[in-house]
Length: 249
Ligand code: F6R
Image (cartoon, rainbow, N blue to C red; front, top):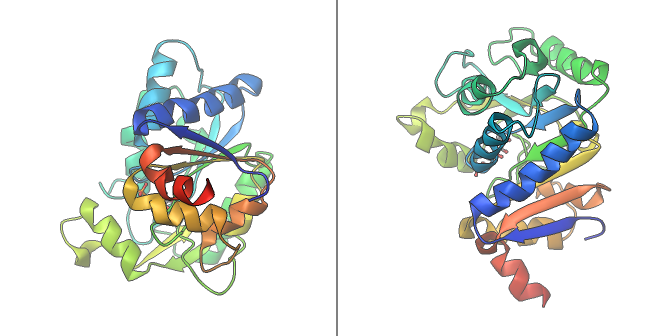
């Protein structure tokens, strides 16, 4: 592990405060900064913390631009399981960010290639991502970049593995309803961010945290590529760091 800064907090709420400090600092330094956002369980305490900080007047999202990592293929924005819907419910509807300054890949895109290229171009036009939030899947995926034999570069359509569909079925009525494909930023899109903050919490993530940050860099564990990024902050709780703590003393 070359450059990664690691913070270990007592619990997910304490980890969220550390991650929120990073976003607060980025926004204060550059009020119109571009933030990359993720969905899933890991960012929820952070989003609650960011909402509370704006309500207390500590952060101002009114000029911030945001680009989400991914979206399920086939789900419209108003579908309760779509990532656009998730972002509205858990963050955007509660902060002053302007709707036109938030982008999420279009789950209903008919011309996939054109949508993916336009997504990359929009981020480029905004001047690139200043600070990117990431979670990690149990198989090491970031966004929907699943383990494979290469690092996919840019925004693209990805097939979901059974492991990921099973992990995400908790949000749907049944496994059959979980989409089989998604649109996701590529590893190149993620690595182009100036700074990256990854949140990993829970004992169930201890093994993948260790493999991703203390093992070899390999597309079989997509998150391991973060070891090569010059500015990654890993914010985890003690449960997630437990195996790394044992192995690295
Ligand atoms: C979601 C995303 C995914 C999740 C990952 C972990 O936008 O990009 O890669 O970060 O699946 O999900 P949770 O946090 O629910 O364990």
